[in-house]
Structures are given as C-alpha cells and as structure tokens.
Image (cartoon, rainbow, N blue to C red; front, side):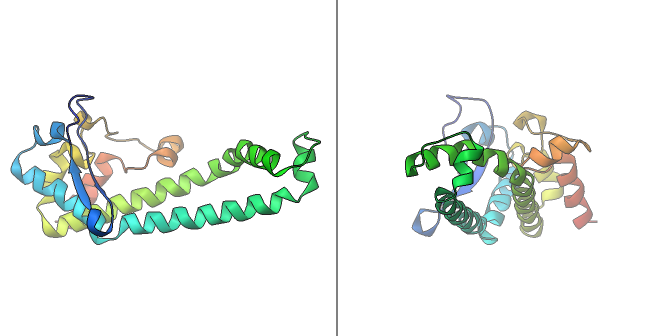
Length: 184
C-alpha cells in the first residue's frame, strides 16, 4: 500500500475473506525492512489467517450486534427507559436516539474485554510466526510487528491499568520476551 503520501508510519495487516484475502504491507514498512524482517512480518500476518482471526472477529461483532438490537427492541416498549432519561414522548425514533446516547456508557465497560481479545490474537499470530520464521530476532526488529518506536508502538506500557485496558496490541517488550522464551 502506498502509505508514504499520508504518513511515515509503517504497518502491515491481514484483511478479507474468501477470494478477497490480502496481506497489506505499507511501502513505508518495506523500505525499512531487511528480507528476513519482511518474512517475519508476513509470518505474523499469516498467523492471523491461520487462526481465522477475521472470521472470529466478525462472529463476535455479529453476535454483539444481535444482542444490542434485541436490547433496543426490548427497551422500545419499556416506559421506565424514557422516563429515566426525562423524555415524555415515546416513539421508535426517540428510542433509537436515546439508545445511541446511552449505549456507549455501558459498552465502555466492554472495551477491556475487546482489548484483551485483540491482544490474544496478536500473541497467537506471534506464536505462529515463531513456528514458521525466525522471529525472536527479526520480528522484534521489524517495525510492522508493532514492536519498535519507529512504528509508534508502545515499547512497554508498564503496569498502568489504563494502558493495559485500552491497548489492542501487547507492549513490544512483552511480545519480544514471549517470543524469546518460546525459542530458548
């Protein structure tokens, strides 16, 4: 992907399903990588494919969407829902507006769980890369692996609860340590 026109940030990701599957490498990433590092980044992205992370994420989003739609359908008929928010007129449109105003307050509590699930996928992709490439050294150096300051990744978010609860990628030092323990 020609990302250099917008940013110097290097990135790689796996996307799509069926015949439209792709591994995308930013040109800014490739320009800074040695061939073994490109292999390590590709192995990591293939790990996402191998573990069916796109499908798993889609199933999770689909299930959560159905749950939220069911909740909205139930709340439409609840008088207390309107009264608690100081609204006198009941209508489907008003319920929809109120629902979208209120739901972020409650789904905010799900962010740590979503972040944990995303970090789990990153560890799984790293483990796959460890089996098929030489990642403890190369993946640790590769900017696309999310493990260098060059990639604007957090090198070590430390024990701060806020960093741990909100980040979707594990801290680079933790990823590197896990990769190295797999190969010792």
